[in-house]
Image 1 (cartoon, rainbow, N blue to C red):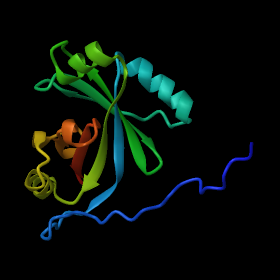
Image 2 (image 1 turned 180 degrees about the horizontal axis):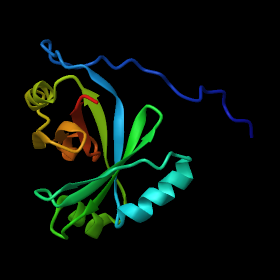
Image 3 (image 1 turned 180 degrees about the vertical axis):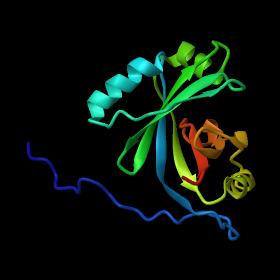
Length: 158
């Protein structure tokens, strides 16, 4: 029985809903954050997997109970996050989900302004704005972003 001829997909225009006063440009994907059990083991695996230069610095944030390291990969980075304590955000994530993608981060010009804009759109900020490993950061509530944990980051100057 022949199949009817139909397009593979249907394209529809969805008008963009924004704040009229939005001044904060969202840029490229800055990094993907991965929760890992061991930064040292994960670094070696990602160096091999991505054929990446072995040049990551391990950073520590005692207040938030996490160690972090960035692997540069082209225009973006892979952020490895290892808990220092089981009761930290990353420790709880590993307990519930195991190792894997924790968040994705997008660059913004001004994270403070972006956080206010998101709140005005009804998207709560669950963490931040605050200092992070790579800059000033804020996380949007994943219940309002289709289950994805989205971080917005205004990077430190390099």
